[in-house]
Length: 100
Image (cartoon, rainbow, N blue to C red; front, top):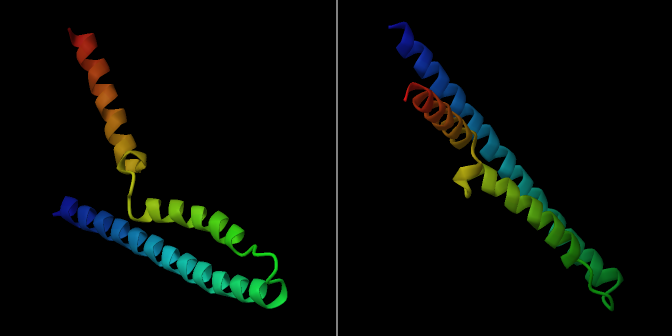
């Protein structure tokens, strides 16, 4: 009965961590959109002859993309689980090679 409780606790911790990461991403997205609108307003109001608002959008957008790729796992080969699986795989290969 203890392993089940431990397993459920681990699953809960993982789910809570994922929810926190998702919440962090949504906060990041909100501020990106809000400040982008603010930059557009500033740019078009005070210096419409020189359009610059897209530079902060681009730079911050790249950061937002990487944040999203981590949260939504766009690149599963960069995930911790993938790393652990590969480490285990290499350890098993080494063990099998030594046994031959």
